[in-house]
Image 1: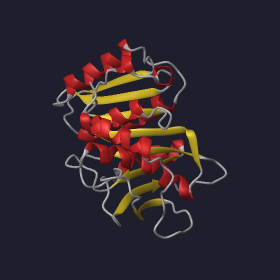
Image 2: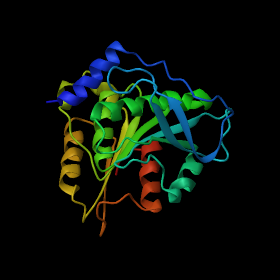
Image 3: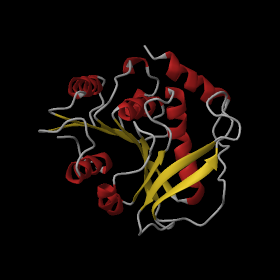
Length: 247
């Protein structure tokens, strides 16, 4: 059964369609690490009037509007949506832009976190040429759990997911979008010392049972509840972007 919290955000999105994102200050596209602020659109009770949302970006230095970039949206368990700097070479290699909302940690209501992940896509599209077939959702710990929910509920937006040390299994059989979901790719990463090891493994088995064959489970030895090293992150992204079957 889906939670009341996520049902609320689905209803919100039905009656308040996306399209009202506005940048607080227009400007030319930037590259590298930076933050951007916007005044949040009015979506029911999820944002206060005039509330500002801050996004953390990483844009590869070789970004060009003539070569549409992929987008990796991140849901953080903390108050910062910033990317680990050790991962930048991986995003550079694959022409991926990173965007994560600040103030979207585990103490934030689930509907707001899901909505921010959707707004992140529109915010990035304001200044950057984004390949709509390469938009992915990611998250760590509690952020990974929320990301796994949102990715399954919005497969028309997200072409796959990358979930670190946290992933929840929905009642996928009731989804009307299973044909789309089965075409996407998902990577679940955990560690042998991770407190979320068993739930992540259970979610992986559920994906496979539901016919989501383009799914990879990475269990990293001697690793606890942490974001992965650059080398493991690189393997996960390579699978996410690849067209080959999982191994």
